[in-house]
Image (tube, rainbow, N blue to C red; front, side, top):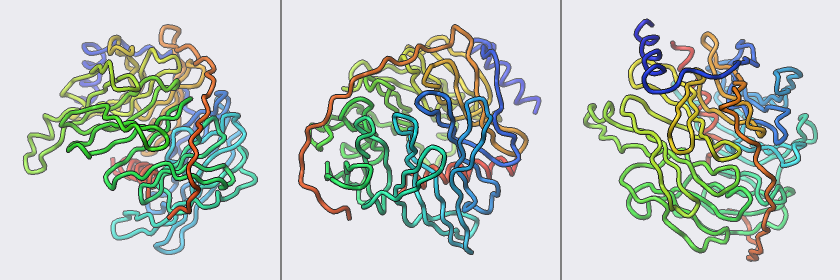
Length: 405
């Protein structure tokens, strides 16, 4: 413990500015493990997820609360029937909120637990509910999906199925249009905010690089070209930049490559130009970069390789002025840019907390951007996964790890 405290102190003293958050508010009480907070478009609400029992993944629930932690309301709950479980509510997207903030996009996952409490996800479909948990409806034709999110200002849902087919459909499931067919090893498809590009990861050129294409599947463009593995791809709120993590490819037969590996944060323009390496320490792994609403700062979490809980850090978009804010992971800027929500820790459980930022760390709110509608017209086809499954598994493993400490 002393070693851990000393490492954190030295990191704050030598590598970054001193912690500058004016206040850290713990919004959930820690009696259950909570995490993955997501702001509503107006910043007044936060949706989050709980897992009360490590050995019962079917007990995952979705909640919503006011941004100050009051008025907590349970929206969904899961079920466990022996080894089978049904999770209702977890979403693989960082933006399940309808642009007007009155509806939520979520998934229903059917799975089975095997030896060692390891879950296997069998089937996922998409659902929509009101922000208070009422009027739950299944989106027709959305079975066996891997990823989904709102697109075109909430008028459409962008969906990727288990066979890597990319679809665009109305929220009620009508007018389903096949946009493109991805390759077997393509992944991490993300719709461009306020636009009609799709960013994704592909190893079609030999390494897992970032690519982009038009929403009809044309104009494929390789944005990165390195022997490292690109992770945690994230559009800026205005869709003009992409932040990502470049990770060393490990040699599993040589343990020394683990300690010498790197996870560094990069940023580039949406066409792949102006690439900038922002972090580069071999003492830590950086992850989950989030560009601020005005695009001038980046929040991320980092973990030291030797005995350290993850830290939330903010830096300028050019990589300067790193500032440690708190212990935690998965930061998310509020729409107004004055707060950061994150998954923290209380005892053996994870909790939802919010950092109230000092003036020098606040972002300006993002200005409204007019959406340019997509004129893509393709024949409607019938749809023949596991983005949401990965998110659930991450929470499950996080809680397991905390319980064992």
